[in-house]
Image (cartoon, rainbow over all chains, first blue to last red; front, side, top):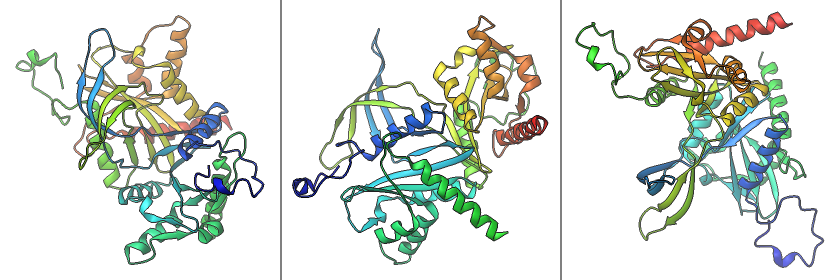
Length: 200
Length: 200
């Protein structure tokens, strides 16, 4: 979990570590989604990596072998699914930065995709893990757009951790699921409904 | 469109063909989804084929090349996305059969996935193209489950076209989008809401 801070481990008392050492945020989310699925709470999957297949061999009596293929850039976010009838859609990003989340973790097409999902009334967000401080936050896509659009007009190239702490939702590791991000989605939904009521 | 019926083409007057010759149902749906996306109507994508990557070369000064990989079985359906705030999830299947849709087009895990999505209040269905009669239908997942579960208990191994005509929704080709399947989803949603009102 703390690849660069192991030299501190003998000095301070280590906090309880639910996140497993060496597990990537992706692995942790896949395990959490498996928990949500097996408990009938939500159906969320990571999409497969898109591959451009060029050459396939079909050997006799065995499975087809892809012999030449290339990675393609995804045109969407990595995760989507359904929770309580809501369409949820998100990306998960890790950063080693300690005080801000760099916006170059995102691509234009991912932002475009999330804006399109929100226009069709989907629930979009990003899950950001600050690896060095071992903290995970859920940040709504509209907060992300705010910084993204300002960056396009010459604004700062990252979202301050202080902003994320204030406007996002801290997700504490627990045992099952490892990353209980749907609790944060519940808070996001409450805030969204309150906003809609104020708008009426 | 009619790979096996071209010998008839000189006898009967061909009906207007919006579906492009040689286009697979997948291509037709991708084109339709592109139309829905670019017009802000819905965000629906086909998921990439899942691949198990075994060996990757990283040549200097050029893109990584996958040198050995295998096709994996998908654990979900092929298409999902968001429409008017609804999570929609479906598979698309073609059959050359003329009077029934064989259930062996589906796998257990796809049915399980659709049942899980419905438990989380998603909208699930299948799009079936009868290639020989050039007709496309949307059939709700609950209708599919009805036949699937009966088959497991020794029932028939296919869904009769007559049942699909009566309980599904015919989707006529048009120009834009080529397969206007969201019109059928609208009808499905109306029927679903009527059912919920009767239940209350």
